[in-house]
Structure formats: C-alpha cells, structure tokens
Length: 301
Ligand SMILES: C[S@@+](CC[C@H](N)C(=O)[O-])C[C@H]1O[C@@H](n2cnc3c(N)ncnc32)[C@H](O)[C@@H]1O
Image (cartoon, rainbow, N blue to C red; front, side, top):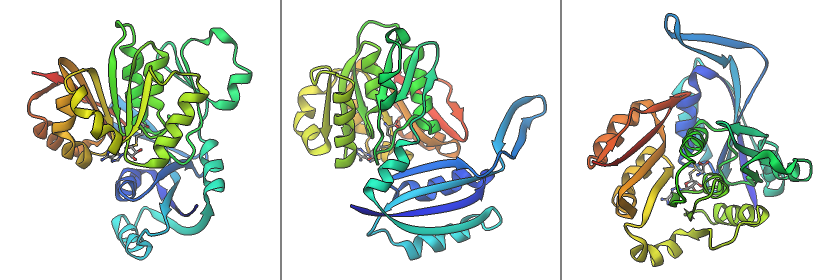
C-alpha cells in the first residue's frame, strides 16, 4: 500500500496542538529532534523542570484518501508562529514500516520491563527479565510516545500481583498487552484497524506467546465474544483518544470485574475533566502527566 507522509518542523511548545490535529487521521505519528538545541521550561520556580528540544520534526503517515488540502489549511492556521516547515511525500508501506521500525529502541520501564527491537533477541542475554521484542510496523505503539509510556510504567509498577485477566482496547502493535503477558498475566487485545491487529498477532508470535495467553481480535470478532466476557477483567486498558474513550465508556466499564481497575490514556491535560465527568461511576486516582498527556487510573467507586 501507499501512504502520504506529512512532515512538519515546529517549535516543541506547539507539539501537542499538532499531535491533536493529526491523531484522528494519522495511521501513525513519529517525533524526532531537529537538532540538539534544548529549552528548559520551569512551570513553578524550582519545580517541574522540563527539558524539551527547541524544534521537533513530526511525521504523520496518512491514508491516500486523507483530505490534504483541508488538513494543510488547519495545520497552517493552528499555531502559525511555531510552524516552520510543512512538506508532503508519497511513500510505500515498505518504506513506512522501515522508518517506523527504526523507532523501536531498547527501553526500560521501572526496575524490570524492557521493550527491545526484534533484532535484539539475538544479542540479549536470557536473564534480562520480562522483555517484549517489537516491530511496530505501521501500527501505533513503539513505546516512545508518552501515552504508551504512561501505561507501561503503570503496568510495570503493578506487576507484582497474582496473574490477572486484562483487556487492552485499542492495542495498536500490541505493546501493552505483550508487556502484561511477559509480566505473567493473560488477556485480550482488540483494535479496529486490521493492520494493527496483524501487527499485534505478528508481535505475539515473534515473542512465542500462546494464543491462549493473548487473544488478538478485530472489533467485529470482539463484538461476537463480548457478552460472554462481560464483567470478567481485573484490568481494562484503553490508550486511544479522549473522544473515543468517552464513546466507548459503557463497553469498557461493562467489561470490568466489580473490583476491577480501568486505565485510560491518550488524554490531553485539558481533556481530563471531561473524561472524568463522563466516567462518573469511576473513582479516579490523581492524574499522572507526561509531556502534556495524562494517564487516568480508577475503579468503580
Ligand atoms: C494511540 S494508539 C495505542 C496503541 C497501543 N495500545 C499503545 O499504547 O501504544 C490507539 C489505537 O486504538 C485504535 N482505535 C482507535 N479507535 C478505536 C476503536 N473505536 N475501537 C478499537 N480500536 C480503536 C487505533 O487503531 C490505534 O491502534
């Protein structure tokens, strides 16, 4: 298949605005620094010191049917003083996958969980602890995006429980579900994008995880199973976008065990209150933020 690759060079202060504009349409978004130059931002004097790249390149992969004319107008008017350059190329899926594969870099979450590119399986020593070998392909979920990182950090910090049954709704590459499985749990991974489902299955197989431990399903297949699984998950994860998470509210809550935990990600700071008020039966812990994105964890009150 062939895609548009839309690249923006922008000041990092405008990054979340542009991510938000593109998230609805992009199959995947990759962010990289333009140079080593950084800015240091201090929200409160002496606290919350952030080091950001001054300028970043954001590359969004878009389907050919995307309305590029409208999108360009929206992008140009969103934050004109921060947008330095905008360009579009047509790329094949092979090129796209190659670019994105490079984005899986070895990462460690907490004390033990590791995400590594598939190629590292040959060189890793066996006693590294729980490790997911990943090829994101063109699916979202290489581990570098703050929304994914927030979920991986929570999974790692809460790994020392008895094995649980989890649902990862909007699984992308399968990264969160695979991380949960290598830490001893089992569950379901669901996505409405067939390429994400294919990617998650391929990553599950590469990690030699049995389909009984992790069932990867398209949304239609999930809908056929859903009623038999309602109320059976100790943990329900949805790292999608605030609007979609709100639309899926009933379905996500229905899947929780009475004492189950729900983890929502893909939420921007200014969307937290609308998500919290939509999920009014959930008692949420304090939100946790990373680079403008927020993780919400809660349980039925
Ligand atoms: C932000 S990505 C998260 C991927 C991965 N779970 C992670 O944490 O990196 C969101 C995923 O949700 C999927 N998605 C979006 N809307 C959905 C819906 N209504 N039902 C199921 N999946 C959906 C997208 O295809 C995408 O793969």
